Image 1: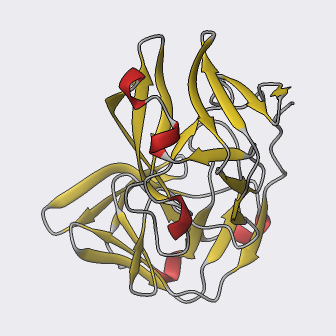
Image 2: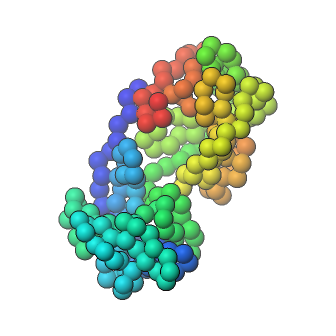
Image 3: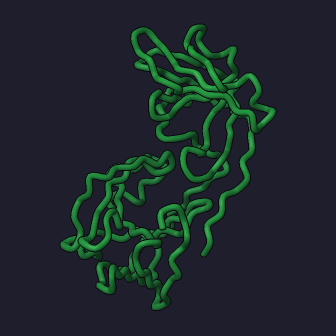
Length: 236
């Protein structure tokens, strides 16, 4: 199964968007534009705010459509930039999601903006799901929770009691998904970061709490006796 990215586009948002550096607000807007984009690297959904809604003096040392951001004694180098690809974003600027803190209304948002067209549905199932790593059976379950996420392969979340957790060890890897929460990873002696779990998912996705899912791309997955072809994705 080939993995493809949708074309990027811009749409307005009704959410109040604020950006902070070290606790200081450097941008505050109810007129933000949402750039919906997916591509390798940092091209993920983000908000662009009108330059007029950026705190005066917060953008410094502009060159080539990029600026450093300052607030008090804090400085983030090259942490703001313009966009020349979309005419709707003229006189707008976005900020780094790594170096600054973003808020939708009064709730902090991590990693990237949430795409309103992006769905995450979790459905309990009785399919038999078997997971093999290098030919060894590491999971066998007839009570998976299937997670269907826009533009991504189906993920199979399994109860830990149906997984050979003795073959897995906790990894130092941690990632964040705005649609699911913080994930902690598990490694197999033969495949690093082969699986993950959400010990405390966001309130919108409670059904995946403490379940274990494996990368379809890195294991051999059999569902109801039928081997699934590994998808070709950025995680392959």
